[in-house]
Each structure stands twice: as structure tokens, then as C-alpha cells.
Image (cartoon, rainbow, N blue to C red; front, top):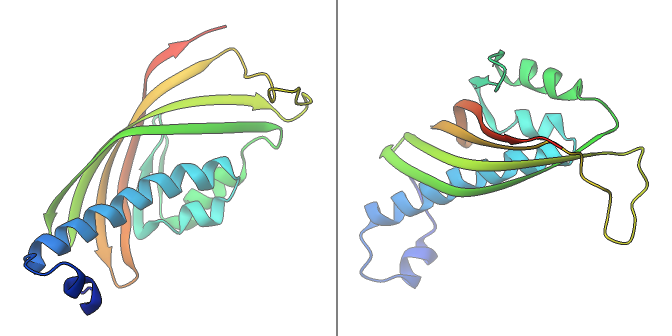
Length: 160
């Protein structure tokens, strides 16, 4: 990995390998957070750009999408009136090599209908609340760190 010399100057005595690991962890954490941000903002192209060219996304229903084009197309088909908010926590990233990392995170998904007008406290959330997990493999490409594989699954549901 390469990093800015000024960053090393700001952290004298830090082993460059330690700095590389920290930068890799931060880049992968950013991918986790951008994925849900793009999803909630209805940005399928931005979401797909987070994946490597051969990136794989396994959805909770078992559907497997391969490559950014297929991923963008699937997310573009989302119903226009469905609003979502994904709250992500427990993000853990382990750097396995200079070009590979793995990670896991927990997600709480709330959704609402765009057809329902917001009140003083926002739109009412739909009755179903879902908790899930992401298991990720990240790869360092010429464009930077990208998602090589993401497996999503639901772990809990609360019905209305």
C-alpha cells in the first residue's frame, strides 16, 4: 500500500506496515458504510461502483448477483415508493494481506412508504423491522479497495 508521506510525518515512530493496516481497515469500513448510504439514497450506480469487476453479492433471499452491472440493475428495480434506512454497527475488519481483507457487520433495516406523508416526527415506519448481517471479502484493486464478495442474511424479524 502507499500512503501520504505527510501522514507518516504526523505519526513518527509508527511502523509503516501498521499504518498500511489501519488505512486498509478504514477503506474497507468506508465501503461498508457507503453501501448502505447508496442503498438508502437510491443510488444503484454508486452502490455497484463499490464492488470489484467480478464482485459478488449474495442477497438474503439467496439471489446471487455477479459484477457491478448486475448489481446496479437489481437495485434499480427497487419499488419507487419504498424508503429504507439501514443502521450498521459492530463493523469488524481483519486485514489478511496487503490486497485482501474480510469483515462482518450487523444491520437494522427500517422501511416506510413514500406515499405516506411525513408527520412532525417523520414518516411512520412499516411494521416489519429486520436485523441482519453482512459478511464481506474486500480486495485491493488498481482503483483502491473494493468489495469482492458480500453475503447478506437476515437474523431477526419483528412483525407489526
